[in-house]
Length: 358
View 1: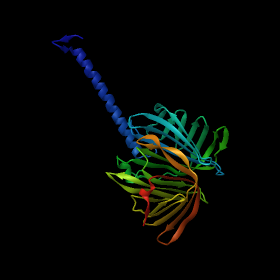
View 2: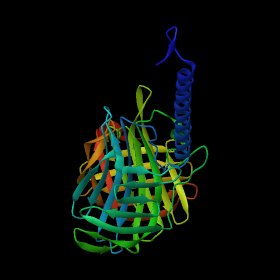
View 3: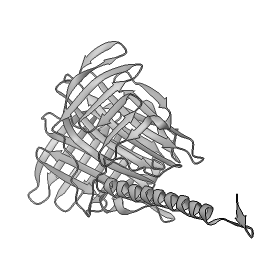
């Protein structure tokens, strides 16, 4: 390098400034791009939220698939996991709820490709969105499409089922509902056998954050005696600024309206109970009383997130029967008294932390 009294010449100095300026501009563009994607995801919970994340983070989507005669029940769970050291992997879990088996397919993190500004993800040669899934796995191949989805209500101050907690940046785990209920078309070849899922029913949700709660109950069913009804309810221990509280989110889609029972809409959790045979929840908001009695059935073990990586284990049933009674408090009218079949049910962790009876 030519120098004058120990300094780089002006041409070299200008070149260094130009390079540093371009690097700064690129970094600025990346930052703006990342902020834009994060804001879009904040108000659209179905989208990928992990922009810029490199460690202690997971995100997964849950597709529940039941065929028309209810003889087949599957859950497909794509996602991304990052441990505290920055080791990353993409995955697709498969739960066969009738045969009580599960598979965990691992992929390189570079094979997880989320779209910007909308919910579409690719995991290797597999595609997932709210409208369809296309699977090309060793044991499952085919495409399913979804119609007449029922999303959770959303507004600028309450974007999805998390409500105002969506804006809290330090939650251990966030939750989203993509569809409470929808119809399915198409077929899948599963272990060499073609299975028609046309006219079946489906459900979609997701989780993201660092870990599942240390103790929680989760349940869902949309197979009641009449179509157009779907239930989702969960209770969990929520870490909060050095302490914790018992949080809950529940909702029942009754033909054409969603009735919500949540921590943030003045609902009271009057009862939360679980033993080896049953789970009971009683939730009461200003207008309605929701009573739930779930029968625990045989479960299958699934991988779950701990500090971002899928090192934990939980047990899920997809064959539980869930008794539901919904009452209008004003006129004492029973709006629903029915049993939901093919119920998804998880009772995980230290359940004693979330039991209530008052």
